[in-house]
Image (cartoon, rainbow, N blue to C red; front, top):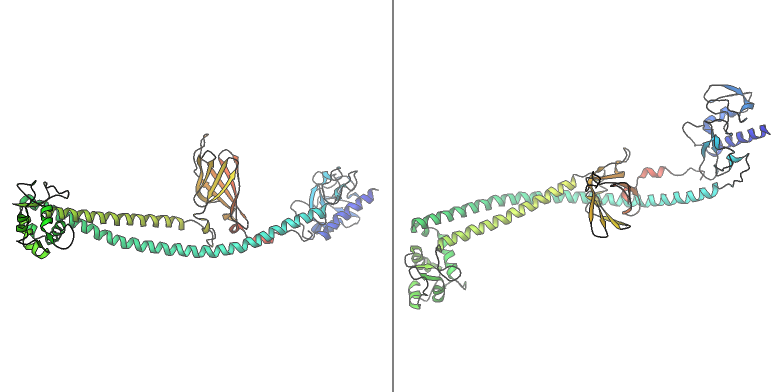
Length: 462
């Protein structure tokens, strides 16, 4: 009976050679490479070369070799391994101690050849399920790789667009820099004229005021209330007052006299008549904007004030535009400095956010920006800001790390590790908190699909 069992186990072991030509495991026996050791002959050499024993002692339920190689089909050796053929499913090894222990470890029941356990061969059903799963994974991978290629093409175009946008903004900034210098010069000049006008008024230098031709037009426009290009009697009465009797409104005759004897005058006539009278400032002056005369209402000074204010307003607008463009340039440069993958395939994730509700919390992942957690009560907590890629050396783009979130009540700051997995759509799949304030997320996206995965198919025996 012992010889029958020994032969049966040896046949089982050798059958694995034919059924699993590519099986290979470290630190265990390989049916393909070790077949020569189990050919029936007068003696058996332990695979580690430590001992030679009679071949009759192979599978005799007694451990003779230190490496357990003489007992591949029994549980005699503590270091022994039993090879499960598992035709129709995945072959594998189990410790020899599990052979004939009454528990079915091999799906083909080959490990319980001499026990009272009633094992059924489930390898085919297991193989079918795994084949269906792997086929589904392969279909997902194929579709994901196709979508990834599209995203790569979009990423390249988007990268070029952003580079062009950066160049355009830089050109706008250069143009605004030139305008900024010009408006600064104009404001400085307007401030200088205003200062000179004020000094001239204080010194009573009317000849200097008359040399300021620009104030003539400004004063004319101030008096021309209805903006029809002429000054009338009514407009003179409304805007001009006597220096020594500011409250009294000029009579019609007085207004006509100021208009040179007529009832209206244009800019040319104004410059040679009423302008000179106003410039002298001895008899009449211009009322303030509210219709009442007051101190410091000289038309020259008012014109200089308006010119200075105008230039100051223009300068402020250009400064704000210049600052805005520079902020846009800085923001765009920061975005372009991020590693979006070798083909910019992850670029489309920038400025996007993905949400997932888990119980009473809503988690939001904004790639290359931040991760947040929001409760039903509306309280939002930062779980970290974009830090770096932290994948394996073979695939550094398989994990993202978000650091320096809000502090935990126990100290330290919150952080999140995001694992990217292959899928046909881009979505946040799961969120867990394995340790206090340390979060992990599963983020599915086609750009995480790797062509190398297609080489990891199931064995042909499935």
